[in-house]
Amino acid sequence: MSALLKNIEEQARALSAEDRARLAESMLESLHTSITEIEAAWAEEVEERVSAFDRGELPSYSAEELFAEAHRTL
Image 1 (cartoon, rainbow, N blue to C red):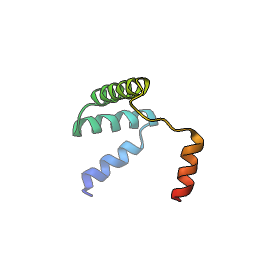
Image 2 (cartoon, one colour; image 1 turned 60 degrees about the vertical axis):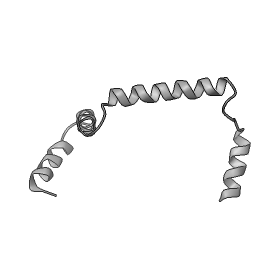
Image 3 (cartoon, rainbow, N blue to C red; image 1 turned 90 degrees about the vertical axis):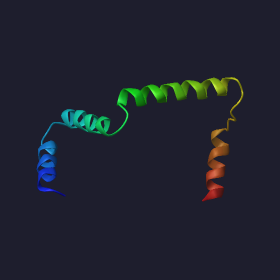
Image 4 (tube, rainbow, N blue to C red; image 1 turned 180 degrees about the vertical axis):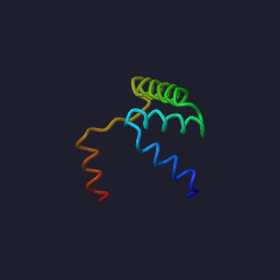
């Protein structure tokens, strides 16, 4: 780790939790797609999955079935 990065990290850790969260979000956005775009894509995905479920295109399982399968797998 470079000295500059270490210094920035130390300064960031001194920030409030809210400011650290904002900084983290900003840093992530600088690497990839914006958080807003990611959230919009997930919202669209959720809507598509719910619609598919409502149309009967996705299977559903009871909690009992899921837990039984988990126990069998373990």
